[in-house]
Each structure stands twice: as structure tokens, then as C-alpha cells.
Image (cartoon, rainbow, N blue to C red; front, side, top):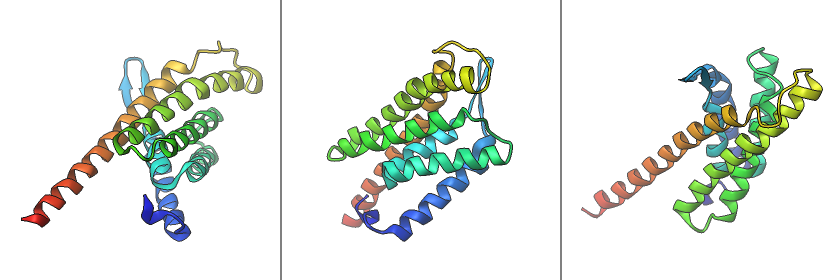
Length: 175
């Protein structure tokens, strides 16, 4: 987003709105078999990564996790997955920013890889050694992966819909 580049006030405002949405909507879940999928954090991560960049996306993920933990709505395991996913989403989006359709998909891939795989393994380490719950290294990969995939798909739908709306607006202006 070229309009946001260098506009710190606008970036902070959008960041604040994304953090508020991430906290308020964190109770939304989708039943997935015996598990519950909480996709909002991942949706926010990808949106933040694309609109604001990797640094803001990581800061947003950290603050959402912190506020949720302070309110008793989250766990320590929210930190590694959300922050790594946000960082990877932002970095991949930035790397592929010249190719619009691909860049959004790469941001989603970064979220899924960062949260689902890397975040899942770090969460397993945290659960085992910091929280005293012995789990296998790959224990969190499937639930974190499903949740991040669903949230990333939501964000991709939003990006595609806004692109279609922009295209339709251009067509109607020509008429």
C-alpha cells in the first residue's frame, strides 16, 4: 500500500483497529471435528502484514496475545505462533510485492508456515519445558496449521473481493 508508506499516524490507527478486532473477535471459533479453529488472529496477521508491513504485523500479534493473556482469554502458546506467522507473512509479502496476486498468496503461505509449522514446534517446546506439559515436537502443528490456514483463506477472500470491487469501479467510471 503506497498510501501508507511513511504515514505513521495512519499506520498506528489501522494497527490499533486491528489489535482491537483481534482481541474482541478472539472468541469466534469454527468447530473442526473435535477441535476448535480460532482463525481471527491469523486473518489479522495477514491483513496487518500486507497493509502495514512485517514490523507492525509482529507488534500487533504480540499486543493481541498480551492483551488476551491479561484478560484471561489466551495462553502463553499464543505468542510464538502468532508472532512468527506475522513476521513470515510480512516478509514474504514484501519479497513478492511486485507481483500483486502472488504477493497476497505468499503472505498467506508465510502465515501458515510460520504459525503452523515453526510456531507449532516452538509452542511444543514452551509447553514441555516452560509450562510442564510434556508434548511431542509436532503436537501443535495440525491445530495451529488448520487455524492459520482458515484465517489466511479468509484474508485472501477479502483481498480478492477488494480487487474485484476496484476493477468494477474502474469499469463503471469508464461508462
